[in-house]
Length: 481
Image 1 (cartoon, one colour):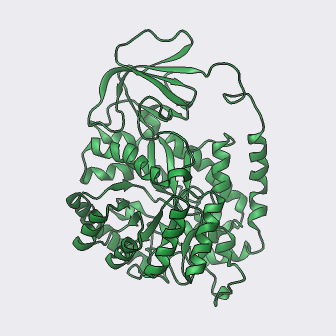
Image 2 (cartoon, helix red, strand yellow; image 1 turned 90 degrees about the vertical axis):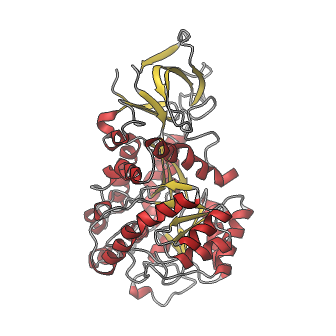
Image 3 (cartoon, helix red, strand yellow; image 1 turned 180 degrees about the horizontal axis):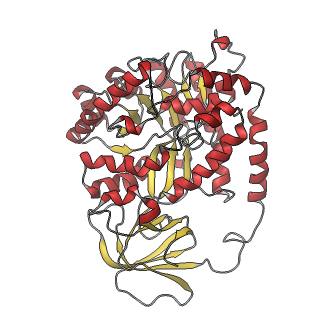
C-alpha cells in the first residue's frame, strides 16, 4: 500500500518532516482503503513490458557498442590526483581499457573529445530515499499515490542528472521501483534497497494513527501495509521482519536503534531495541551473507548497536570520544550526513526543531571524532520530503570541505561509498565494480567541465558543469554534441 505513512517513514528518517502533522494524518486516513498491490499495478505492467525481449546487448548478436573518451584528465576514484591526457574505452556497460599512450581510436568506436575535462566515476549517495525525496506536502495531502510515484519517477531522473549514478536506499517500498530502473523502464540511479526499516512500538518511524494503538499483532498498521516500516517487539518478530525484507530483495537491513529528529513520539536520546533484539537482526542478516545498519544518534544507542554486531551506524551525530573509539576498534562503518544549518532540512517546529539544532551542533564534533579515530566514513545526503531541497544533493556533498580535502571528498563519494555497498556480499544486486574508473568496472562515468579536485563546488551546479553523464554504458546527458 502506498500511503503517506509509507512516505513519512522516510521523512522521519531525515533531517525533518511533518509526518505527524494534522495534514498528513488526514491524508493517511484518505488513503486507508488503498492497497499496496493496487498502487503498484500500473508500474508492474510497465515492468512486464520493460522486461520483454527487445533489441539490446543481451539479445543482439553484434558486438557491443564502443565509446571512447579521448584527451581527458582522469580521476580514478582512489588516487589523490588526476592523470592528464588519458583515453578510456567503454564496451557495452563496462570499461574495457584505459590508455595513456594515445593510441588511435578503434574504427568502430564513437569518440567523445573531452578537451582536458575531468573524467571521474559516477557519484554514490549512501543515504537516500528514492520514493520520497522529492514528494512535497501538497502531493502527500492530496491522497493520490499515483502522484507520489509520478513525482518519484521524475526525481529519479533528476538524481541521475545530478551525477548520482548509485544510491543506497535506507527505507521504503522501493523494490518494484528499482526493477523499473534496472529494466530501463524509467531512468534513475542504481538502487541498493533496504526495504522497510525495522522499528519497535514507539520507536523512530512508528507512524501509526492513534486509532491503531494498541497494536494488534495479527493486523498490520497503515505504515506496515505501505511497506515503509515494520514493527517488531520481540526477538521472533525481529527475525521475521528482517527475513521478509531479504526475501523481497534487500541488499542490507535498516534497523531503527533509537529516536530521531522528526518523530515527536520518539525523542532523539531514546534507545529502542535491546542488545538481544539487535543481535537477532544481525544474525539473520549474516545468515543471508549481508549486514545490518543501525539508525542511532545517542552514544548509548550507538554502543548497543556495536555490541550487537552491526556493521554500520547511520548518523551518530551525538557520539562522544568513548563511542568513537569503540567504532574504530571494532572497524564499524559510520554513515553520516553533514547537516550544517537549517538550510539542509525542511522547516521544523517544536521538539523536532530543537532536535535538529542538536544534530547541527553535533555535526562538526562527530566529523572531528571520525577523523581523529580513523573511522571508516561514508557520505549520504538524507534529503527528504522536499523538491526544493533535492537540488542541494551536490551541495550537501561539498559541505565536507569543512573537514576534508577535495580529493578526499571525491574519494568518499565514489570508491569509499562503493566499499560500503560491497558489504552486501552476494546480496549485492549489481555484479561489478562501482565507484572507480578501471578496466572491468561498470561504465558509470561523469565528465566534468572543470577540475573538481581544485574546485569541489563545481558539483553544486550539475546542469552547468556536468558535460557527460553515463550510467551502465548508456549516455544520459551529453552537451558536447
